[in-house]
Amino acid sequence: MNLPEKAVRLRIFTGEENRIDHRPTFEVIVHEARQRGLAGATVYRGVMGYGVNSQVRTTSILRLSEDLPMIIEIVDTAEKIAPFKDYLIETMSEGLVTAEEVNVVFHKHNQGKK
Image (cartoon, rainbow, N blue to C red; front, side):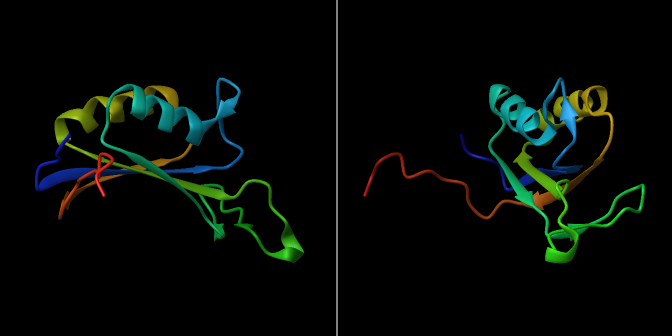
């Protein structure tokens, strides 16, 4: 799959402990994105952050948090991202979702060639 030069980056902010049907939200989102054939998804674990409740979560030794911030990024065409945004709105009970146009420099896979 080749992405066009103009694509959309979906960024989903959630917490490590957030769940959808008893599964971690970030896992559910990545698996759903793959099932829908989106170009790719990456999950990042934050070292510090806070959300709508203003409770700071951190990896600090003095304040070991088990609910670190998580960011999921997905890049694909606007046509494929739009229905996925609707899925997130219906499925997520908390978090933040943003979307922005991005310029794809290249998107390629080695496909076993050396």
